[in-house]
Amino acid sequence: MTKIFNRSSEKKKRRSLRFGMPKSEILLWDKIRGRQIKGFKFRRQYSVGRYVVDFYCPKTKLAIEVDGDSHFQEGAEDYDKERQRYIESCGIRFLRFTNLDVQENMDGVLDVIYRNLA
Image (cartoon, rainbow, N blue to C red; front, top):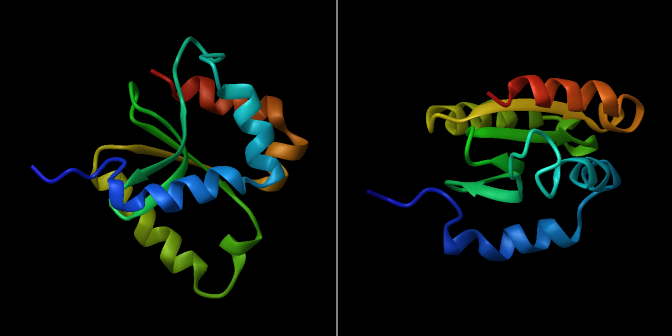
Protein backbone atom coordinates (compact mmCIF):
# COMPACT_ATOMS: atom_id res chain seq x y z
CA MET A 1 0.00 0.00 0.00
CA THR A 2 1.27 3.46 -0.87
CA LYS A 3 1.97 5.73 2.08
CA ILE A 4 -0.29 8.77 1.94
CA PHE A 5 0.15 10.27 5.42
CA ASN A 6 3.13 12.51 6.25
CA ARG A 7 5.20 11.46 3.24
CA SER A 8 8.85 12.38 3.57
CA SER A 9 8.56 14.21 0.23
CA GLU A 10 6.23 16.72 1.93
CA LYS A 11 8.39 17.22 5.04
CA LYS A 12 9.97 20.48 3.90
CA LYS A 13 6.53 21.95 3.09
CA ARG A 14 5.12 20.88 6.48
CA ARG A 15 8.06 22.37 8.35
CA SER A 16 7.81 25.64 6.45
CA LEU A 17 4.09 25.88 7.24
CA ARG A 18 4.68 25.16 10.94
CA PHE A 19 7.22 27.97 11.23
CA GLY A 20 5.02 30.41 9.31
CA MET A 21 1.68 29.79 10.99
CA PRO A 22 -0.72 32.74 10.80
CA LYS A 23 -2.10 34.28 13.99
CA SER A 24 -5.42 32.40 13.81
CA GLU A 25 -3.69 29.03 13.52
CA ILE A 26 -1.42 29.87 16.45
CA LEU A 27 -4.44 30.84 18.56
CA LEU A 28 -6.29 27.62 17.74
CA TRP A 29 -3.18 25.45 18.18
CA ASP A 30 -2.75 26.90 21.67
CA LYS A 31 -6.25 25.63 22.55
CA ILE A 32 -6.07 22.11 21.03
CA ARG A 33 -2.45 21.06 21.59
CA GLY A 34 -1.41 18.83 24.46
CA ARG A 35 -4.61 16.79 24.53
CA GLN A 36 -6.66 19.73 25.90
CA ILE A 37 -9.90 18.65 24.22
CA LYS A 38 -11.29 15.37 25.58
CA GLY A 39 -7.73 13.99 25.75
CA PHE A 40 -7.37 13.79 21.95
CA LYS A 41 -3.99 14.43 20.38
CA PHE A 42 -3.77 16.81 17.44
CA ARG A 43 -0.93 17.23 15.00
CA ARG A 44 -0.28 20.45 13.14
CA GLN A 45 0.57 20.72 9.44
CA TYR A 46 -0.15 17.06 8.70
CA SER A 47 0.08 15.86 5.12
CA VAL A 48 -2.45 13.67 3.37
CA GLY A 49 -1.15 12.78 -0.07
CA ARG A 50 0.19 15.96 -1.64
CA TYR A 51 -2.00 18.17 0.57
CA VAL A 52 -1.29 19.55 4.04
CA VAL A 53 -4.06 20.16 6.58
CA ASP A 54 -3.62 22.67 9.37
CA PHE A 55 -4.55 20.27 12.19
CA TYR A 56 -5.30 16.56 12.32
CA CYS A 57 -6.51 14.17 15.02
CA PRO A 58 -5.34 10.69 13.96
CA LYS A 59 -7.49 8.79 16.45
CA THR A 60 -10.77 10.25 15.14
CA LYS A 61 -9.57 10.99 11.59
CA LEU A 62 -10.62 14.62 11.88
CA ALA A 63 -8.92 17.37 9.85
CA ILE A 64 -9.29 21.04 10.73
CA GLU A 65 -8.57 23.82 8.28
CA VAL A 66 -8.37 27.53 9.15
CA ASP A 67 -8.98 29.55 6.00
CA GLY A 68 -7.14 32.83 5.62
CA ASP A 69 -7.22 35.38 2.83
CA SER A 70 -5.56 33.08 0.27
CA HIS A 71 -8.60 30.79 0.36
CA PHE A 72 -10.79 33.60 -0.95
CA GLN A 73 -8.71 34.45 -4.02
CA GLU A 74 -9.83 33.63 -7.57
CA GLY A 75 -9.54 29.90 -8.25
CA ALA A 76 -8.98 29.01 -4.61
CA GLU A 77 -12.51 27.69 -4.11
CA ASP A 78 -12.08 25.03 -6.81
CA TYR A 79 -8.69 24.02 -5.42
CA ASP A 80 -10.12 23.79 -1.88
CA LYS A 81 -13.02 21.63 -3.08
CA GLU A 82 -10.66 19.26 -4.91
CA ARG A 83 -8.36 19.11 -1.90
CA GLN A 84 -11.20 18.47 0.54
CA ARG A 85 -12.71 15.81 -1.72
CA TYR A 86 -9.37 13.97 -1.84
CA ILE A 87 -8.86 14.18 1.93
CA GLU A 88 -12.39 12.95 2.60
CA SER A 89 -11.86 10.08 0.14
CA CYS A 90 -9.14 8.89 2.55
CA GLY A 91 -11.79 8.46 5.26
CA ILE A 92 -11.02 11.75 6.98
CA ARG A 93 -13.75 14.09 8.22
CA PHE A 94 -13.15 17.76 7.54
CA LEU A 95 -13.94 20.92 9.51
CA ARG A 96 -13.34 24.35 8.02
CA PHE A 97 -13.21 27.67 9.87
CA THR A 98 -12.20 31.17 8.81
CA ASN A 99 -9.60 33.34 10.51
CA LEU A 100 -12.48 35.51 11.68
CA ASP A 101 -14.25 32.51 13.26
CA VAL A 102 -11.14 31.68 15.27
CA GLN A 103 -10.36 35.26 16.28
CA GLU A 104 -13.88 36.35 17.19
CA ASN A 105 -15.64 33.14 18.22
CA MET A 106 -13.04 30.78 19.67
CA ASP A 107 -15.56 29.22 22.08
CA GLY A 108 -17.88 28.40 19.17
CA VAL A 109 -15.01 26.92 17.14
CA LEU A 110 -13.90 24.77 20.09
CA ASP A 111 -17.49 23.63 20.65
CA VAL A 112 -17.78 22.44 17.03
CA ILE A 113 -14.45 20.61 17.33
CA TYR A 114 -15.49 19.07 20.66
CA ARG A 115 -18.77 17.80 19.19
CA ASN A 116 -16.94 16.24 16.22
CA LEU A 117 -14.52 14.24 18.33
CA ALA A 118 -16.41 10.98 18.59
